[in-house]
Image (tube, rainbow, N blue to C red; front, side):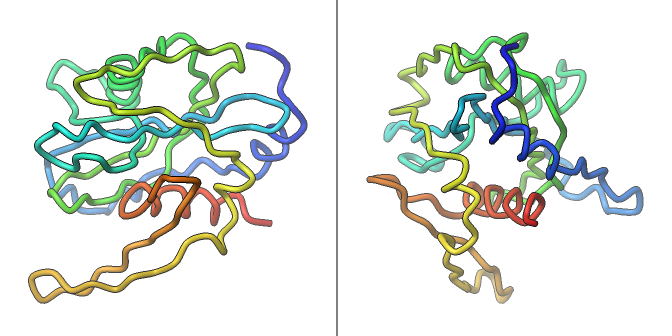
Length: 190
């Protein structure tokens, strides 16, 4: 991998690997993982996708590449890398995994583990037309600005949930994706 940019080096010194709480309940049992891909540039970027409008679930939403863990997957990191290759053609060997964020529970009942990885600035991606409408890059510095996320409190089945919302260009980033980026922001905050 190319030399790390000063901006990315600063991010890496602030990033702290989080280990899951050993006492944490294992529910829900359905597991998934997403890759949080950071591109190693002078001004690092965060790679995001907009899901295809034809998908049955979460159509048209901004997301990280990722999906459900297959029984053959040897780890959730493997799941995130496999899904990133399937969705946007990122070769797993090009990703330098630096850690994971705490798992989050999706509205569809999955425990989703965000896997943070660094990509070389020479990376080329290609969206799988059946799954991804578009791929875009958001400047990491802008993505990590906490003030860009607005809370929305909703009630579902009698339980209050806080959802985070943000816009970037023509992309509406909300829900679990915005929450993951916001969590990453909190983790590297000075």
